[in-house]
Length: 197
Image (cartoon, rainbow, N blue to C red):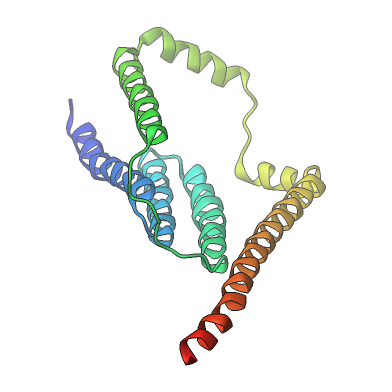
């Protein structure tokens, strides 16, 4: 292992640890707002890992799309629902144990695949060079031109669909809140009248 690989691993290790801790925080925090901000931390750390791996365009896209759009959308939706932020039940049920078991099995399978794959095989490197020779070179400018010319209408339709889905989700959440607050307000005057006797 040379010095550059050691530096690369020493930078990637805290980033990967942050991804792991942020993911655990996302699923284990009882407060929905804290959980949403924890997922934002995970998205940011994933972007940093792409940046360290010299995939600058993917890192910028990760930051813009996931942190700048998806996570802001999640935080906005959580804050707009006006539901209690704290989880009501802290007991572990059968579903929690099943989900934990499945996640642990998938994690162990990924670890096994990561360690048993020969990532730096010479045949793989030669194959990738052959693919690079046959593949036409596409730069960011061509990609941007294609997105804003050929795929502009599908991109805009997809953004409109996501906007309508978000508005519908917030509207249905507010309707449920109105029903529950209506029930509470209809029962509260009788309580006030009863307490005045």
